[in-house]
Image (tube, rainbow, N blue to C red; front, side):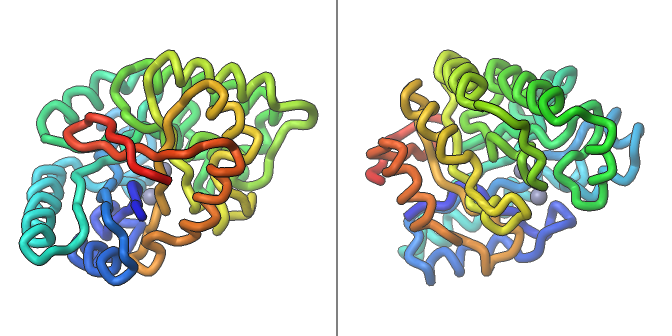
Length: 271
Ligand SMILES: [Zn+2]
Ligand SMILES: [Zn+2]
């Protein structure tokens, strides 16, 4: 059992310390856990809208976070606990790539999740910002979101694309056949050499389904895109949540293995 996506108190909208996450992972029989707090946001984004500071750890805490996870890895190893990976979830959006690249180059990450939470600076997944949907045609928003997500994949910054259809979070889904879009995105991911995660947080949100959806997973499998699993826990109690649902959805989509990343190299593990 693996969980490659969890957040600590450090990002200011989650709770729990690194040690608490590792202890819960040990209790639940998780073999490998990656801490993946939100990479600090760019100063430009924060200057534009100071409220976004609550979405990520402050810029000066990144070295401390890294040291803490590395220390937790060593103590878990000494105690025969779970494998602890140093991960990060980076916001990769147009114009932000060089900022992210510079921060990533400073630390020995095992795994980088690349996510899109902003469209033109709008945090479309924040329940407090839902009014923003009123100014978008849903299909246009989806096309824009997936366009930015494909750019994130092509940036080469990320090993794994986070919650690949996050744009459905509040149930805004375009009418009609979405398979052509999913196929196009899946092919682009395959070409870019990124994996995706099955993120179980979607089950806890208004959309009430996994990210990505079942048809999207089928398209990803057909395109040969590798997968991993993450709970996107924002509290230790959520570690490993809905793992069986994720595993079953992957099997239904035709997957037979997962990947984990160590020193940013993919390694296969059985599903
Ligand atoms: Zn978060
Ligand atoms: Zn995220």
